[in-house]
Amino acid sequence: QLQLVQSGGGLVQPGGSLTLSCAASEFSLDVYAVGWFRQAPGKEREGVVCIISDGTTYVKDSVKDSVKGRFTVSRDNAKNTVYLQMNSLKPEDTAVYYCVADLYCDWSPQFGSWGQGTQVTVSS
Image (cartoon, rainbow, N blue to C red):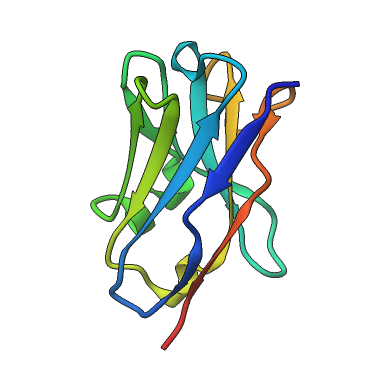
């Protein structure tokens, strides 16, 4: 099992920004697709965005209207890290956010390796 370590969550006011990080220390993350998922209280975990090894990004259709233009996924292979930049945050973005490394982008990953999750709370 590949180990991913997440950081960067916290409490932010509506309209604010956060950047989440997903880092690997014992393997090269650059050959993997990395997806970001979130689970809001009382809801199922849902896919949000994904980035593959060549930098191509995807947004899950069901959240596209909600996050497009606000959420950006990127990767820094030199730092072995994938980032989720979240701008103009809304209370409905409140959730535990997870990253997952897999061979390809999969909105229902069966074999991916997950980060530990990080809480994002958007509240005034």
